[in-house]
Image (cartoon, rainbow, N blue to C red; front, side):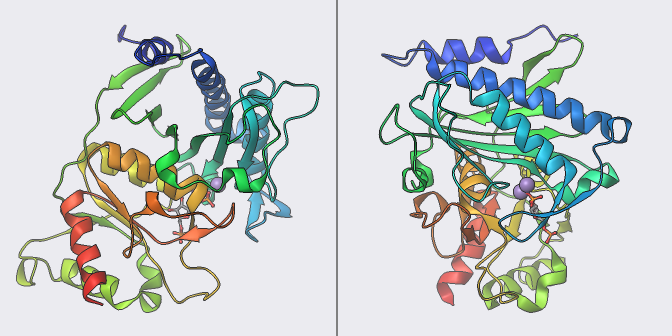
Length: 335
Ligand code: AHG
Ligand code: MN
Ligand code: MN
């Protein structure tokens, strides 16, 4: 039985250290937590409540939407739009910025999210997640435009993810380290179970979708080839490989026991410089990874420094254990 710090208590205690804090942010996070609990319930019940399977529709990325992509997007909107903390929302599942309805007050924050990450795993009962990023609205209490959202990742006020795995967890950072909370379903609260999470600097575990190998650039080809050569190769040690196809699950594994995750630039589709999206996948995860002592790069530059050009922009992602990411970045530097 765990009777430690609840997430609400943790956030309120953090807020006390911030001069001039109004409690707005705490209240916003509370609503987000409610959304995550509702999503966890829907994902967990699955076929019992008829939420599995695909729809006819496609999202702005041209991906076929799952029923749960749409349901979870709706849960995020309905739970977060009413309280007056937000000036706008943006999501993987909506082409344009979501304007807060006129009947509700506007606030000083922007919320960006991937309501269901890894949704190809939903029908086969493998872990999925929700990723979110909170930014400050450049002009508070005014309906936000797309341009207002296009802030580099270093400007994030908070980033987090929920992992719907064998237990439901919420992991978040406000720029003072990373903390993990586990949902106690009977109590209905998230409890602090993983304080001050740190990514080991070294690792022997890598994650990449190897079916794309022929499209990778030379630095990634070299890195993976050297890992595969193991003890007999230039790295002088054996590596292990994992690929869940849910970024949330991969990042959580890396936060727990180290590792490197790569969805690198490839030549598969020249219009897409990577698969993952900057605003609601790469940026929040990079913020968390850096706050846990890891590193996140495109191979060529720090992800958090990138100036976003559009809401659904894709970027190459290489993140995780610092020393290992440095090796891959070094190979990019050498060309
Ligand atoms: P989403 O379900 O939100 O579209 O994201 C899926 C992403 C990411 O979670 C995962 O790492 C990657 O796509 C999986 O890609 P492959 O299908 O190429 O394995
Ligand atoms: Mn995703
Ligand atoms: Mn998604």
